[in-house]
Image (cartoon, rainbow, N blue to C red; front, side, top):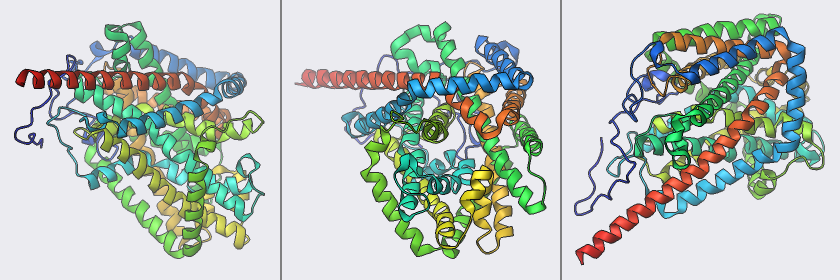
Length: 560
């Protein structure tokens, strides 16, 4: 419920562009699944179409579908050509513009910190009388569910143990204590503030535009301060099409990573041969599940699964912390955190001027590109749960809470794997190098109850897989239906199928390497869009703040 302002305080006059916003705005729900919010409420904000059916579909939908189909056909029929083109494009993009990912994400982070500590940090995401819908504790829990999904299983062990064997930028000798600290340091960098800065600026822009200005939840609408009514023309449509493709390939990459984890886990549990055919079969089955979920709206089931997965993740974390090398993990956590903090700006601007391009392509550039491609989906999620919060509170929470949670998870699971390889004669790094999907399960093999924990890990991967893809299907439907939060069932089915097909053809084309190459190449235009919307947001917030101050000054002068 909204609270009224304290007695005697006058609410500043709304700016010219502000419009009334409905009490409930439908965006992805608190659990990341669509059921809690995606199907309700945003119809009416900025007057998007409310009906279902083909009549609400425009050029953004048809262009996006056509290009997606062409890409799938290209990957399926001309696989070698696709690999050659994406590899060439990857080398050109990273060699020529890799610095752009570093500079843009650091710039966004600095912008957000400045905004949070500036006077505009007190501005509400909504009307001045709005107050947060959720308590701080509930909101923090929701933040942790935003993208704490398949990445926890895919990279929680794989990245630190890979850096132990091949230390970043040659900063340590392989498989040494120094390499262990560097391994976690760079894992924190890849999964910390830079990632959440991208999500935060997108979520902040969506929330401000939708709740404060009454616009439709489309990426193109965020450029209204620059383009005015032209956001509804060809330029705006091009922005929305690029948003669709960034989201599509980001989701496809996650599906591919999920398939690697599930297939490796099932292979270990049931001695099933792990190959590309089995991985494609996994993608097909999960695609059918999340598409059915999106179409039939089995929201309570998805919501319950999300809560169950959260409890399972916490339980596994506590178990590994308790039975693992607890004291070693605590010491490693503190030391690596200190090194991350002291080296933060060096890491933020360290490119490939003197080599390391291949390493950067596989890690830093890929990670930053992946976060960029997830910007629209996670941004909409964050906006949905943050109405009524101040800009300062939103930025502070989004940047810090998930980062700390990721750091802690990586320190416990990655640190346990590091301890096994350094002090117990383990070969987790070798197994990871042979197959990326082995890392998490190879670590569990060195702990008690490995069969039980492996089953839990597979279930976690499946649930994370389904809930994330379910929500992404809704976001793709919304982005291609003029911002309607009630996209038709045929639209949802089509995007579900195309997402699964994209992941399948990329897995068959080259596995993890093909997924990484494609997401980096396709995210570059969207990086430009995110940089642009950051500037547009800063310009609009500043203008609105000055207008409010001017009005307050006029009233004060008049009162005298």
